[in-house]
Length: 272
View 1 (cartoon, rainbow, N blue to C red):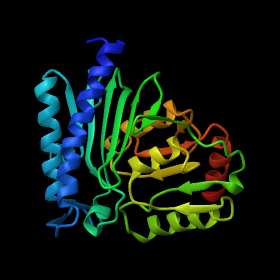
View 2: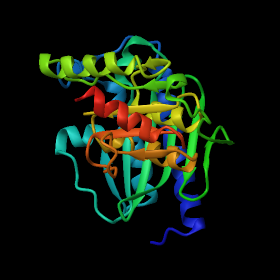
View 3: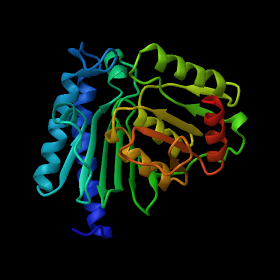
View 4: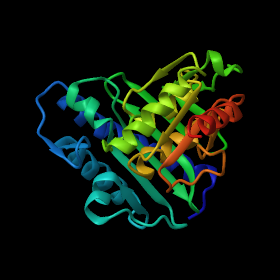
């Protein structure tokens, strides 16, 4: 069960196959009317989320029956699985469900593989824009087969920052979130809230975004692929406090090679 070159290559091929199959399902349902359920007040789930997860897990399980799986819809039913050292596929079958419901084209399939609790392979596929992000640990990050790198922006005042509002709508959380945004708007060039954690990470990886942070997102399935994408593109991933990043913590920040400390400082003063 090594993570040699050949093994990782094989894992990536299977991850891409699974992502493309699910992507076809998303694409074919994108412009149709949706059956929507609520997981929380604003957190949505559709039949497509569930269909895609089944499809992905079946494909992966057929190929790698001994591997473990953590998925968003499975976790909603079974509770989040513990992450162990075993090879584990961590899957968000449809990141950006609200976007999907509204036909806003920022939706993707996110498939990450961890070995020894570390991300080793990542696939993020947006079938609407036909963008396939792929990465293998130590081997770089790619968009549709072309190597990608983080931006070279070294001034936070010229940076484009992405974040998300999150799914909680209680007054305390909303106030803390909007106060933070209010503060950050004076620090950066502009702000984007495009509704997909995985695509935000890919945006940092390919230099469309300079910075990203999110507090309280759904779980490891949102970020397992994107974290490796940023790291392999020359960026850094860390806890918003500046401390070491934990895949299971539901807190994340990412930056290019220059702006990590600036973002940490800006978040610290925003929350002071």
